Length: 78
Image (cartoon, rainbow, N blue to C red; front, side, top):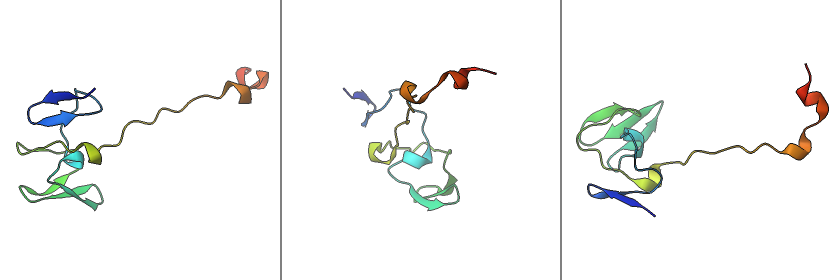
């Protein structure tokens, strides 16, 4: 289920902090910089009032799973 906030749909989490990394206006340049037609060169963590959420640019968090079958008693001794 997606939540609606303003004019954009938030697919992963409704408490998303705005960032140029996943703004529909921004284009990744590399080296931690985003080219924005509204504000010029911006940091990937920066944002402005024109921020518009683009869900296809956001990468969900990857959760690693521990494989219990690969552990032995020695892994738990000091």
